[in-house]
Amino acid sequence: MQKIKKHLTMKELPVTERPYEKCEKNGAGTLSDAELLAIILKTGTRGDKVMDLAVQLLNLNPSCPGLEGIMGLELADFQKIRGIGRVKAVQLAAVCELSRRMSRIQFSESYAFTTPQSIADYYMAYMCRLGHEEVHVMMLDTKQHMISECLLTKGTVNASLIAPREIFIKALKAGAVSIVLVHNHPSGDDTPSREDLAATEKVRSAGELIGIRLIDHIIIGSGHFTSLCGSWNHLGKGKHHWREENTVSTLEQ
Image 1 (spheres, one colour):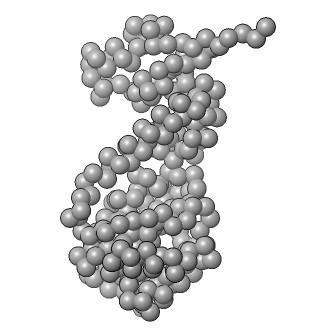
Image 2 (cartoon, rainbow, N blue to C red; image 1 turned 180 degrees about the vertical axis):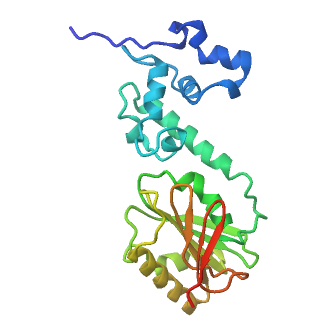
């Protein structure tokens, strides 16, 4: 006869280990990352307390342990942990998405994206820990306010998958004056590949013919990024590499 798994609830933990009580008494800011996750998970499994489950979750992404690593996980990744099924996985995915959206609250409709740093700030929290590549297109008006954005491709980035026709149809419909391409490197290394350079040139050339300028192509790495075009009004043409702490420019005449 198969044994029924017993789920260990918060109430079965010693009082001193109960995140709920600690939160009520001292505030959420006093809880560790594992304790906050335990509140979301609610129950553990037979042999694993809910806190143990939370710690496993924090170490699920070996290349980036901790909360940042969780941000790049998908439903199937969460369910690799015994005790996290469909419901818990969906709850965790929802919390991650809320976190990403909250990080973008500062970017109102009147916010002007005038530098590579401002573009990277907008996408960094979402894209820097993804386990796969994504290409996003940001559409801007004359004052470089964002009109709209869209996910163009998901998977491997190369010139053949980035179709200028699709990009500029969307840009024309949105009434965009300029666009910015943004994609991530799951390896964390933001060094551009040959495919990145080819795709950039392909879109830039098409934009010149249509009259919608490709301002930049930003590559998101692990906490840093590279700007391929540098075609910003105050920078002029060339290639500029921007980092979080400082700026290093290499102009290609």
